Image (cartoon, rainbow, N blue to C red; front, side):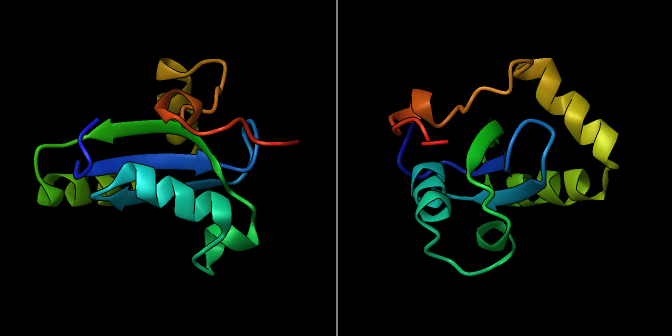
Length: 103
């Protein structure tokens, strides 16, 4: 993965728990921020730190358009998107070099 890669991502608090849809130009840095609770906000308050889905895009504009579309989806559509590509709800951040989360 390149250092700067526009991505849309979904993180959660647990399998089928609270979901957060975000967009970033640097997924690795953004996941680190979520896990370290660097930014105070919805994700930090709800302890949403597990990466369960992401999609890379060619441009930031395309990523933002995708994020806005997914944010409008109902919860079941988001769950189906995750389960289609990550049926075990694995923490995909581990495959990107992060340590497993402590439970």
